[in-house]
Amino acid sequence: MAGPRALPVTQQVGRARGCGRGEPAELRAEAARCPVLDGDGRSVPFQALYGDRKAIVVFVRNFLCYTCKEYVEDLAKVPKAFLQEANVRLIVIGQSSYHHIKPFCSLTGYTHEMYVDPQREIYKTLGMKRGEGNNISVRSPHVKSNALLGSIRSIWRAMTGPAFDFQGDPAQQGGALIIGPGNEVHFLHLDKNRLDHVPINTILQLAGVKTVNFSNKPQIIDI
Image (cartoon, rainbow, N blue to C red; front, side):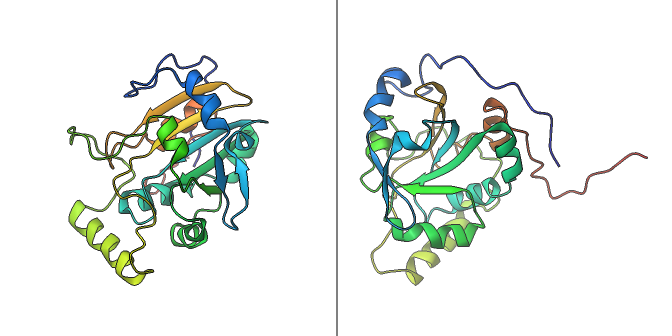
């Protein structure tokens, strides 16, 4: 079920939360030229993803990470109709080989756009950190597994996949960006650790997209 649509954010963020490298506007020009690859290995510049319309861009840690998998599973629940109505693109970017895009989409049920930044150029330019932060109180509302069970599942996927392929830098953290059309940055969040995800409905509201009911509880309708 959809929630109310929020007005889109129109002012540019002055300084990204947790980013000590300057304002997003200063970083964007450098990141815009970085190439990203689609599931077939085709390369496009990052700026091609948001040049003509607003885009929600979610950067994930790596494709073996259980928290990323469960977060993307909920991103998969965002209806395409909501995005089309708001004229907004939803894009996930990883930092592995492009060969892992299609299997990860199949695993998570994600049917929106997905690319990879194999050299982590955009991650570095936007100031996304490596390693875990000290704040362990944050908790992603989209992660259902506990750390032990989630880690076991990640290890199992690693063991059953190609040898020595971690599907990305395991120390890399992700983030979320709302950008476009053109060069206007609306929002930038840099994850402190693997559980520091921005709630999906918060991102949707900031981008002017209808929110989604992620609860498994049935809706009660008054008659």
